[in-house]
Structure formats: C-alpha cells, structure tokens
Image (cartoon, rainbow, N blue to C red; front, side, top):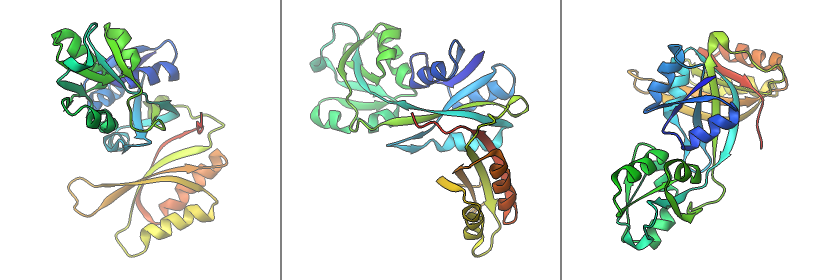
Length: 272
C-alpha cells in the first residue's frame, strides 16, 4: 500500500505511517495539500496526517483539507513525540549557532534555547527535513531538532535526547482513504464531524443539546472561519458513540439545526 505523508523520511509522520500501515511504501510530500492531492488523484492508497498535538493544539489546515476533499478517516493513533538535538557526527554543542526544525517543534523546546542563549532557533519546513539539510550542507554551526529515527536515517548524531519542555507530548494521527474505498470498522465507537449552524441565536447550543440528549459524549470541538464569508464558522467535533447506529442518529439530529453536516469518519478510539 502506498501511503502519503507530509514531510521527509524519518519524520514523526513517517513513524506514525509505518505503525498504522506496517510494510507500507511511504510517499513523502512537501506540503499537506500535496498529500491530499496524491490521495484523491489516486497516486497513493492512503494518507497519514497529524491532526492534534497535546501541547501545541490542532493542525487546523488538516481539518479544512478533510472537509474539502472526498475522503474518510479510518483510524487514529497517538504517537509519543520525543525531540532530540541533532548535528553532524563529531560536532559539539558549543559549535552550534543555529538550530533548525519545524516551528511547532521549536516551540516545544523553549527551555533548551533559554539554557543555550547563543543558539538561535530557525524555522524549517519539516523536522526530518532539517536533519537532511544539515547533513547535506555539512555546516558545523547548524543543528536540528527531530526524532532519533531521523538522525539514524540521515547518518547524523544525537547530541541531547528528550529536550522537549514537557514529556507529556503526544500527536494524534489519522489514517485517511478515499471515501469511495473507505470501509468503517463495525466496532467504531468514535465519529468525527464537521457542521455549520444556521445564523440565528441559540443555534449552536441547540445543535449541541441534540448530541447531549442522545447521550453522545463530545470529546473535542474546534471552530474554523468559512473562507470568503466573514464571521461564519465551521465546527469540527469528535464524539464517542456506543454504536454505528448512534453515530447515524447524531448526524441526523445535527441536521435539524445545521446548514451543513459532513461525516469525516468513524473509527475505534485509540487510548494507547
């Protein structure tokens, strides 16, 4: 199975994809839109995307791409994120002047930069891509923050392990397929939905009350502005459900108060 990810080999998305689809052929993409284009265009069979980090919050672009494309979420998986300071073999920490990584990774390692005032944090498009870059340039003043898998993949050295500010650092990943080929698990106990409410007082409360009356447990809610329509919003929710029938009832109940409802996927909750 070909699986698209955003980022380079050795990234956390790469690790998540290999765990969710063992033996998959990974297809790296430079940006998230390219991931979804590869999936909907048939170049790959599935995609693995990060949807939420326990420290940094939601990956909002991915909610929008799930809504805008004819795809379905099939499963979820949390991955423990462990950041490492990485450099070319033989480089010492005292030689580093600049450390590259994805901005979210840099933001999760503020204590390291506070303790090393002479080292500048520089945003890069990908964690593993930053390791690839420092190895290609062979610049001894450059370091990177990424996984130990990225260090191994590109032949770099880990100078410091576990430099994230908080060890309770997890990213939740989705496995996504084209809607026409997505077969939901019969034991699904979670559903992700997107909806917009009518522009009238109390409409959002009424919609959420419908879910409450069904006994549906709302575990997450996120709002995103509607492009080109100021002050109108799309709401994204995750709900724990007792059965597929309850998921269908929740969608039907929301329809009474919503201008649009889209099921993004049904899957089993993963608490590992």
